Image (tube, rainbow, N blue to C red; front, side, top):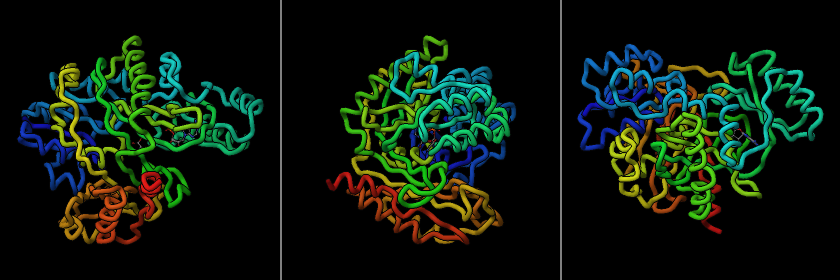
Length: 428
Ligand code: AMP
Ligand code: GLY
């Protein structure tokens, strides 16, 4: 069959690469894709938001399976639109995607399902929220815009003044537009974070191996939050016992509660967790694969992803064999443009991609790249995701950085400590 991946980041490159390995898939298209997906698949110049044009393309080219990567088209109803046109699409429908698209809805689901999470209160008035903060503890707040804000609508405040400034920006200045019409003020938790993703058809969950993202821009988890500067998988922070607990106390009750709310979830349910001294707490849900977590996850997955995707769409996940993983850990290092996560320039030619591609057990997934006159040039903040498998996590890290060091462009940079926490943890 022919498949279409929607999106243009590193996650979509990894999805296209993995789908292309399935014996069931004869051709993979990516819309709109990037310079990397152009190598492993065929790009189609249609925006991820243009559902009529995407549907038209699928019909004209006999595309039988669509995989929607990013949250924006899912929240805008991509899967509903494809279903209506008779095209099988993987991902939650618009109603279920609200678990990511509305943080207020997500919190309601968590509370209804008795899933451990930070205490929170929803507001639509800045004045009420200022009063709430004044009555609380100094330094104990996180302010979150309700709607999608490209990962930027969350402020972890270290003082009441900072919390109030965040409320002002979100609710009064509307820094994230209508996404800030409602917002949450929640209890600030501390601990290490982990990403636990499960594929579910609304009845059965198939949990993927735990991963860890590196959200802060700079080494030592310093600097501003980003979309993620690196990831590794598996993450020993979530051992088998904890993973089982998360399935029982977090993922299953969430899936059941969504069913009760007439929002059956089919797709990837991604729990962003904080491992607090009191146990795991859900910080947020995403309705899709994490980026960059998807890249090391799919690099290790041996099972044919198409089988899992089709079983999800057909609601027969309970019938599939357990997933098979490469035993070796994977480390992913993100290479970024100078200035990211703030403003940055695009269009710099990238050198060293071919040398890096020759290294064994390494794959360079493209995130923000574009072909300009046959040269691969930068076209985003996060530009490349360099993934490597190793016998140990330290070995995977070494191989990933060996590849990273072969690649450069004007202003390229990356964190140098990806997976260090895991290396330390497995040494102890
Ligand atoms: P979210 O988009 O809700 O995952 O938030 C983005 C990031 O903000 C998370 O990865 C955490 O680092 C941080 N964060 C979110 N909620 C909390 C919380 N209640 N306490 C502490 N940090 C948080
Ligand atoms: N890696 C974080 C995310 O995909 O939201």
